[in-house]
Image (cartoon, rainbow, N blue to C red; front, side, top):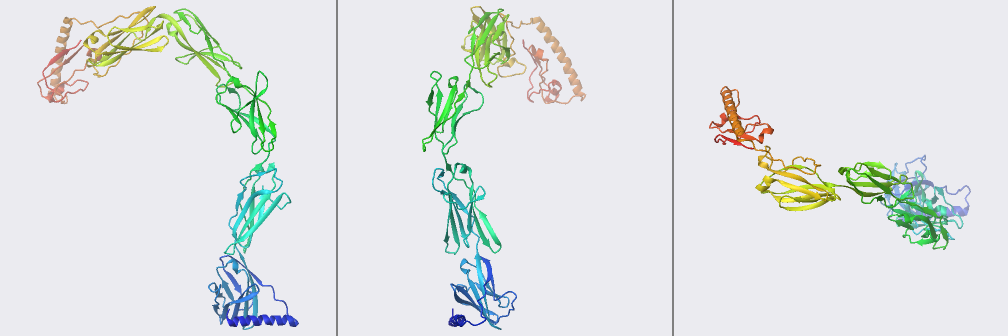
Length: 638
């Protein structure tokens, strides 16, 4: 403030004091200041008088009053304004021909009284109360992480609510399950405090303390901040929180998983539960069937007893005991029966059934269970159900009836509860071969495997008519597979290989014929087997193709030569007439029916040019290489 301003303020104060001391008649107390509201960071318009008062003040002085001490901050002379040095120097400006002072960038420190004094055209004084507001940030809430015991005799801290950077200090209200909480002696206590930041804004911290009961274990708490802005009253809410409540158990009970009917092999969990927090220490007891007394078992840490594969011995009465380690109170659950349904091992009699071919046989199946049992018989190879009931009968047995049979004992009332037993039926008889004879296409000097399969009872043994390395594999109790590793030689091609299966009741054979792959009309280069012929007899004869007579061969050759001569002449005639296209191959194969290819092949070679030899193409469309132009020849194959 300049010297003139200070002198003016002192004179004004002295004058006022003289007026009050003299008790001038008609002198009234100063009127209440005009209220102007603004938000932090905003702008306030300070008018030197009511809005309806005339303007055009040519000389005005503005003061800020702090702790009843006025300080000159702005001068107006002939409509021109000038700021005084100080905190308002950069934030003041004029508006409305000098009657309105504009204060920008408002801070909480600006909440005070502003005074204007007009000297011309007439003396005038007006006071303005500036109110400043700032909405607080969203409130944060922190719950008591340690929890609260219902046995506490005094209110314990539930949560803390913090609202930062508001002005003025907001009001806090606490809620539980949507209902506001009030101070209540020995029950609810709310303790609030505030901190003034360097900015002049306030940070509010409120602590809710309460004495909780068991029913508060699911209660939801939150805080609400109420504050005012120039636009009106507002509020902000925190998120909801729950505090952990500790209370002793009043009841203990037992649960079994899975629910429903149990069977042997199931994973069963016996669990103890209580309505206390934290849960008490549990022990599980099972009744001894002999003494009828409960014997303690050792559960896991979570109060559960796990039976990874339940057995019928686990059936019985179970009971839970809970011990509260704080109050040392003990609670017992009601006994609960655990029933593990079972089916005993299935027994089939006779255990090793056998009978002569054409005879009869009866199989009987037995099993025990705590429930009603049903039986059925299945064929092992196919899975087909043959009979329902505990008895399976055979009449007029055939050797095909030999093999595995399975008896299944099941409990319909307990899904998945069943047991089975496999038994092999042996039909006495000489060996039975899988095939009577086979043909294989081979290459000379290659190594290949010959297989032979036989079955019978007693179990047969297999031998081979040719030398080689043989290995046997059991197919089932009555069957055997022999694999012979041999080298293809001319002798083996001539004689073939004979597999002999024998037992004490007889013998049987299978013959394997070998033929060079080059003699096949299809020209396959790998060894393959022809379709097998089923054999049920006791012996096999080796049948080889009989050689044709030489006379028949000569007649056949003569006929073929004549046919080819006529065919060649006809083709040449049509070719000269232009009726046939010119081919590129000079040598053609006359295609014969498949049944005749193995008997003979006639191939003709000509001296004609390749394009003329195109006339001799066969119906199959096969072509030779362009340079293949040899002499005529006839190839006869038996």
